[in-house]
Amino acid sequence: MFDFDVVLSKKSDLEKTIIRLPRSFYIVFSLITVILFLSIVLYGASIFSISIFILSFISLTYRESWVFDKNSGLIISKVGIGFIYKTKTQKFENIELIELVEFTKGKNPTNMTNSKSSIFEKKYLSIKIHFTNGKDITLITTTARKKDYITLMLDEIESITQKKVER
Image (cartoon, rainbow, N blue to C red):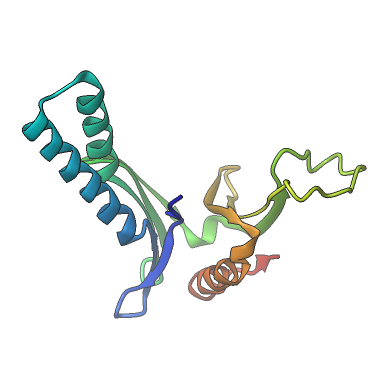
């Protein structure tokens, strides 16, 4: 229904690349929250309407962003709800591998003996960053039809981190 994949943006100083939720995410949940609030005020509250209102308000305060800072050589991720969020930092020098992973939902990538593809099987792409400490992060997982956008995102990450991307 709605496509809320993370979006790529650059700061004006061109030293930071930011991957974050799109503005449309916040606009949609703002509208839903306001409409639900008005319906509760005008028509009375029910447990269902209050529950949906609380869920939409929590969704409205959700935050997810990845900042690639060329000056400090850091990847800063912020994920959370409202003012309760977790910040993680990783150094560019700790990046072992940046890769583009292609997969089909519901198929085991290690056992691809049955290579017949159904029209109902969706192909997906994922950007993963593996670190030398054994940890890895997935920046985005989206449908394969957005390969051009994912490639643009990979090029930007490759440019700012100076690390080779495995495609």
